[in-house]
Image (cartoon, rainbow, N blue to C red):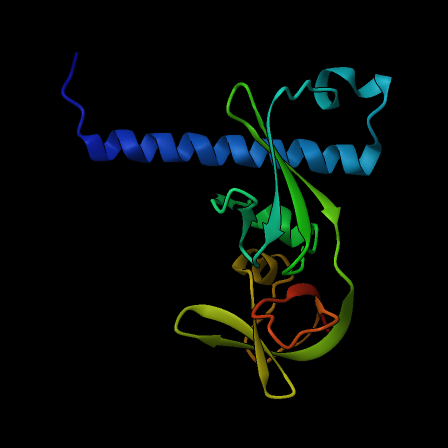
Length: 169
């Protein structure tokens, strides 16, 4: 057997985990769009026996009740317009796949601001308060720094650092 560096093995494992997470998110999104009926049996009716963890979306990840941080795929968070504070349920299937579901959206409000780029991170400036936004959302809407954008933020945004990009105006 060839001598494979640990760094490459770790990278391959990380890539596989990312792919499994993305696949689980895609399946969940498909179920939310078309429903979970018998016609979708081979694709959407996946038995997800495994560990179930509930947690809070922090803007990028889910912080579980077990205090561990679980990666939420940026595309899923972006397309689902998850807001910091939303309650999520994570099912870790026996095959290791991650399946997220939003189970408790927090009250939110929609505001308009200006997209900025600082030190490689995107922010939306709303009345001098800056909210971070996911790169996946910015690229999806093809927004550029200086653009006016609409974002969703928690109704009580006093402690929120993140916003969900709703649309580029």
